[in-house]
Length: 241
Ligand SMILES: *Cc1c(COP(=O)(O)O)cnc(C)c1O
Image (cartoon, rainbow, N blue to C red; front, side, top):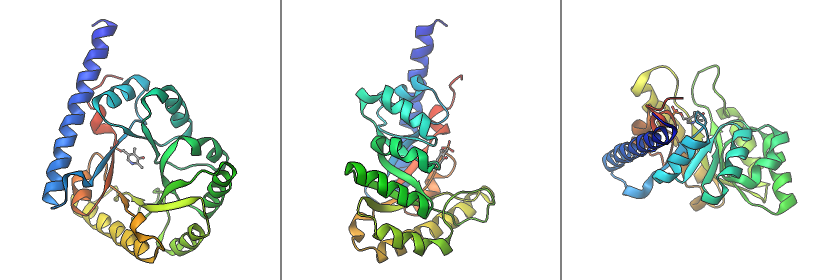
Protein backbone atom coordinates (compact mmCIF):
# COMPACT_ATOMS: atom_id res chain seq x y z
CA UNK A 1 0.00 0.00 0.00
CA UNK A 2 1.17 3.56 -0.62
CA UNK A 3 1.39 6.08 2.19
CA UNK A 4 -2.00 7.56 1.53
CA UNK A 5 -3.87 4.26 1.62
CA UNK A 6 -2.03 3.28 4.79
CA UNK A 7 -3.25 6.52 6.36
CA UNK A 8 -6.80 5.88 5.20
CA UNK A 9 -6.72 2.29 6.46
CA UNK A 10 -5.57 3.55 9.85
CA UNK A 11 -8.35 6.11 9.96
CA UNK A 12 -11.01 3.54 9.12
CA UNK A 13 -9.69 1.05 11.63
CA UNK A 14 -9.56 3.54 14.51
CA UNK A 15 -13.02 4.83 13.65
CA UNK A 16 -14.47 1.35 13.64
CA UNK A 17 -12.75 0.49 16.96
CA UNK A 18 -14.14 3.71 18.44
CA UNK A 19 -17.67 2.99 17.25
CA UNK A 20 -17.52 -0.59 18.49
CA UNK A 21 -16.28 0.58 21.90
CA UNK A 22 -19.01 3.21 22.14
CA UNK A 23 -21.65 0.60 21.48
CA UNK A 24 -20.25 -1.81 24.11
CA UNK A 25 -20.07 1.04 26.61
CA UNK A 26 -23.67 1.97 25.85
CA UNK A 27 -24.72 -1.65 26.51
CA UNK A 28 -22.93 -1.72 29.86
CA UNK A 29 -24.38 1.66 30.87
CA UNK A 30 -27.87 0.42 29.99
CA UNK A 31 -27.30 -2.72 32.07
CA UNK A 32 -26.26 -0.54 35.00
CA UNK A 33 -29.59 1.34 34.70
CA UNK A 34 -27.99 4.74 34.36
CA UNK A 35 -28.53 7.52 31.78
CA UNK A 36 -26.70 7.04 28.46
CA UNK A 37 -24.38 10.01 29.05
CA UNK A 38 -23.21 8.97 32.51
CA UNK A 39 -19.88 7.49 31.38
CA UNK A 40 -17.10 9.45 29.64
CA UNK A 41 -14.63 7.54 27.49
CA UNK A 42 -11.05 8.77 27.74
CA UNK A 43 -8.88 7.52 24.87
CA UNK A 44 -5.43 6.51 26.11
CA UNK A 45 -2.90 7.37 23.39
CA UNK A 46 0.30 6.37 25.21
CA UNK A 47 1.01 3.47 22.82
CA UNK A 48 0.62 5.39 19.58
CA UNK A 49 2.16 8.21 17.58
CA UNK A 50 0.71 11.53 16.58
CA UNK A 51 -0.97 10.22 13.42
CA UNK A 52 -2.93 7.53 15.21
CA UNK A 53 -3.81 10.00 17.96
CA UNK A 54 -5.18 12.36 15.33
CA UNK A 55 -7.27 9.54 13.85
CA UNK A 56 -8.90 9.02 17.22
CA UNK A 57 -9.69 12.72 17.53
CA UNK A 58 -11.12 12.74 14.02
CA UNK A 59 -13.29 9.76 14.92
CA UNK A 60 -14.84 11.89 17.67
CA UNK A 61 -12.94 11.09 20.87
CA UNK A 62 -12.07 14.44 22.44
CA UNK A 63 -10.85 13.26 25.84
CA UNK A 64 -7.30 11.96 25.50
CA UNK A 65 -4.84 10.63 28.08
CA UNK A 66 -1.11 10.08 28.31
CA UNK A 67 0.83 8.53 31.15
CA UNK A 68 4.14 10.30 30.52
CA UNK A 69 4.21 14.08 30.91
CA UNK A 70 6.71 14.55 28.05
CA UNK A 71 4.42 12.77 25.59
CA UNK A 72 1.51 14.84 26.81
CA UNK A 73 3.41 18.10 26.28
CA UNK A 74 4.43 17.23 22.77
CA UNK A 75 1.03 15.93 21.63
CA UNK A 76 -0.78 18.81 23.31
CA UNK A 77 1.37 21.24 21.40
CA UNK A 78 1.03 19.50 18.06
CA UNK A 79 -2.73 18.97 18.35
CA UNK A 80 -3.47 22.38 19.83
CA UNK A 81 -5.77 23.34 16.96
CA UNK A 82 -8.04 20.35 17.77
CA UNK A 83 -8.14 21.39 21.47
CA UNK A 84 -8.66 17.93 22.98
CA UNK A 85 -9.17 17.69 26.73
CA UNK A 86 -5.95 16.19 28.10
CA UNK A 87 -5.83 13.80 31.06
CA UNK A 88 -2.68 12.68 32.83
CA UNK A 89 -2.97 9.10 34.10
CA UNK A 90 0.63 8.35 35.09
CA UNK A 91 2.95 9.45 37.84
CA UNK A 92 4.01 13.10 37.75
CA UNK A 93 7.44 14.07 39.04
CA UNK A 94 7.36 17.34 40.90
CA UNK A 95 9.87 19.03 38.61
CA UNK A 96 7.50 18.43 35.68
CA UNK A 97 4.39 19.84 37.36
CA UNK A 98 4.81 23.42 36.25
CA UNK A 99 4.99 22.60 32.56
CA UNK A 100 2.21 19.99 32.74
CA UNK A 101 -0.44 21.99 34.59
CA UNK A 102 -1.38 24.39 31.77
CA UNK A 103 -2.05 21.43 29.42
CA UNK A 104 -4.38 19.60 31.77
CA UNK A 105 -8.11 19.15 31.83
CA UNK A 106 -7.95 16.53 34.60
CA UNK A 107 -5.12 14.95 36.56
CA UNK A 108 -5.97 11.35 37.53
CA UNK A 109 -2.80 10.48 39.39
CA UNK A 110 -2.42 12.56 42.54
CA UNK A 111 -0.56 10.10 44.75
CA UNK A 112 1.39 12.00 47.42
CA UNK A 113 1.32 14.98 49.72
CA UNK A 114 4.55 16.26 48.24
CA UNK A 115 3.10 16.30 44.76
CA UNK A 116 -0.06 17.98 46.06
CA UNK A 117 1.99 20.77 47.61
CA UNK A 118 3.95 21.25 44.39
CA UNK A 119 0.75 21.43 42.34
CA UNK A 120 -0.71 24.01 44.71
CA UNK A 121 2.42 26.16 44.52
CA UNK A 122 2.62 26.01 40.72
CA UNK A 123 -1.11 26.64 40.26
CA UNK A 124 -1.05 29.56 42.69
CA UNK A 125 1.76 31.16 40.69
CA UNK A 126 -0.50 31.50 37.64
CA UNK A 127 -3.90 31.56 39.34
CA UNK A 128 -4.96 28.31 37.68
CA UNK A 129 -7.45 25.97 39.38
CA UNK A 130 -6.64 22.33 38.75
CA UNK A 131 -9.11 19.45 38.82
CA UNK A 132 -7.56 16.31 40.29
CA UNK A 133 -8.43 12.73 41.14
CA UNK A 134 -6.79 10.85 43.96
CA UNK A 135 -5.24 7.66 42.67
CA UNK A 136 -6.15 4.96 45.15
CA UNK A 137 -4.78 1.46 45.50
CA UNK A 138 -7.07 -1.25 46.83
CA UNK A 139 -5.13 -4.23 45.45
CA UNK A 140 -2.46 -6.40 46.94
CA UNK A 141 -0.30 -6.12 43.80
CA UNK A 142 3.26 -5.16 44.66
CA UNK A 143 3.88 -2.98 41.66
CA UNK A 144 0.74 -0.89 41.55
CA UNK A 145 0.90 2.83 42.17
CA UNK A 146 -1.56 4.91 44.14
CA UNK A 147 -2.40 5.86 47.68
CA UNK A 148 -3.09 3.13 50.21
CA UNK A 149 -5.99 3.50 52.59
CA UNK A 150 -3.84 4.42 55.59
CA UNK A 151 -2.47 7.48 53.73
CA UNK A 152 -5.82 8.73 52.53
CA UNK A 153 -6.86 10.98 55.38
CA UNK A 154 -3.54 12.82 55.40
CA UNK A 155 -3.96 13.59 51.71
CA UNK A 156 -7.57 14.64 52.09
CA UNK A 157 -6.60 17.05 54.87
CA UNK A 158 -3.92 18.40 52.55
CA UNK A 159 -6.34 18.89 49.68
CA UNK A 160 -8.70 20.82 51.94
CA UNK A 161 -5.93 23.36 52.56
CA UNK A 162 -5.12 23.92 48.88
CA UNK A 163 -7.21 26.68 47.34
CA UNK A 164 -6.09 25.97 43.75
CA UNK A 165 -6.71 22.23 43.79
CA UNK A 166 -10.24 20.92 43.25
CA UNK A 167 -10.70 17.30 44.24
CA UNK A 168 -13.14 15.80 41.73
CA UNK A 169 -12.97 12.13 42.71
CA UNK A 170 -10.79 9.05 42.54
CA UNK A 171 -8.98 6.90 40.00
CA UNK A 172 -8.21 3.23 40.56
CA UNK A 173 -7.30 -0.02 38.87
CA UNK A 174 -8.29 -3.62 39.43
CA UNK A 175 -5.81 -6.34 40.42
CA UNK A 176 -3.79 -7.89 37.64
CA UNK A 177 -4.84 -11.37 38.70
CA UNK A 178 -8.22 -12.85 39.48
CA UNK A 179 -10.22 -12.08 36.35
CA UNK A 180 -13.61 -10.54 36.15
CA UNK A 181 -14.85 -11.48 39.66
CA UNK A 182 -11.82 -9.96 41.34
CA UNK A 183 -12.16 -6.87 39.14
CA UNK A 184 -15.77 -6.39 40.29
CA UNK A 185 -14.68 -6.67 43.93
CA UNK A 186 -11.84 -4.20 43.43
CA UNK A 187 -14.09 -1.74 41.63
CA UNK A 188 -16.68 -2.01 44.40
CA UNK A 189 -13.94 -1.22 46.94
CA UNK A 190 -12.78 1.80 44.90
CA UNK A 191 -16.35 3.03 44.68
CA UNK A 192 -16.65 2.65 48.46
CA UNK A 193 -13.63 4.92 48.91
CA UNK A 194 -15.06 7.39 46.41
CA UNK A 195 -18.35 7.57 48.29
CA UNK A 196 -16.66 7.99 51.62
CA UNK A 197 -14.45 10.80 50.28
CA UNK A 198 -17.48 12.47 48.74
CA UNK A 199 -19.30 12.20 52.05
CA UNK A 200 -16.44 13.93 53.89
CA UNK A 201 -15.98 16.67 51.33
CA UNK A 202 -17.12 20.26 51.96
CA UNK A 203 -18.44 20.52 48.40
CA UNK A 204 -19.57 17.01 47.79
CA UNK A 205 -21.57 17.80 44.62
CA UNK A 206 -18.33 18.63 42.79
CA UNK A 207 -16.83 15.26 43.76
CA UNK A 208 -18.39 13.49 40.82
CA UNK A 209 -15.71 11.55 38.91
CA UNK A 210 -15.06 7.86 39.45
CA UNK A 211 -12.32 6.91 36.99
CA UNK A 212 -12.07 3.14 36.66
CA UNK A 213 -12.11 0.61 33.87
CA UNK A 214 -9.66 -0.11 31.02
CA UNK A 215 -9.74 -2.15 27.79
CA UNK A 216 -10.13 -5.48 29.56
CA UNK A 217 -12.53 -4.56 32.35
CA UNK A 218 -14.56 -1.45 31.47
CA UNK A 219 -17.88 -3.33 31.51
CA UNK A 220 -17.25 -4.55 35.08
CA UNK A 221 -16.23 -1.02 36.10
CA UNK A 222 -19.37 0.52 34.61
CA UNK A 223 -21.54 -2.02 36.43
CA UNK A 224 -19.82 -0.92 39.66
CA UNK A 225 -20.56 2.76 39.03
CA UNK A 226 -17.63 4.10 37.01
CA UNK A 227 -18.26 7.51 35.42
CA UNK A 228 -15.05 7.61 33.40
CA UNK A 229 -13.18 4.79 31.66
CA UNK A 230 -9.64 4.97 30.29
CA UNK A 231 -9.27 2.83 27.18
CA UNK A 232 -6.12 2.42 25.13
CA UNK A 233 -5.26 -0.87 23.45
CA UNK A 234 -8.84 -1.63 22.34
CA UNK A 235 -8.95 1.59 20.31
CA UNK A 236 -5.75 0.88 18.43
CA UNK A 237 -6.29 -2.80 17.82
CA UNK A 238 -5.27 -3.92 14.38
CA UNK A 239 -2.89 -1.06 13.59
CA UNK A 240 0.54 -1.92 12.32
CA UNK A 241 3.12 -0.12 14.36
C1 LIG B 1 -2.30 2.30 30.00
C2 LIG B 1 -3.34 2.70 30.96
C3 LIG B 1 -4.72 2.58 30.64
C4 LIG B 1 -5.22 1.96 29.34
O1 LIG B 1 -4.98 0.60 29.34
P1 LIG B 1 -5.57 -0.38 28.21
O2 LIG B 1 -5.61 -1.69 28.86
O3 LIG B 1 -4.62 -0.30 27.08
O4 LIG B 1 -6.92 0.11 27.84
C5 LIG B 1 -5.63 3.01 31.58
N1 LIG B 1 -5.25 3.55 32.76
C6 LIG B 1 -3.97 3.69 33.10
C7 LIG B 1 -3.62 4.28 34.42
C8 LIG B 1 -2.97 3.26 32.23
O5 LIG B 1 -1.68 3.38 32.58
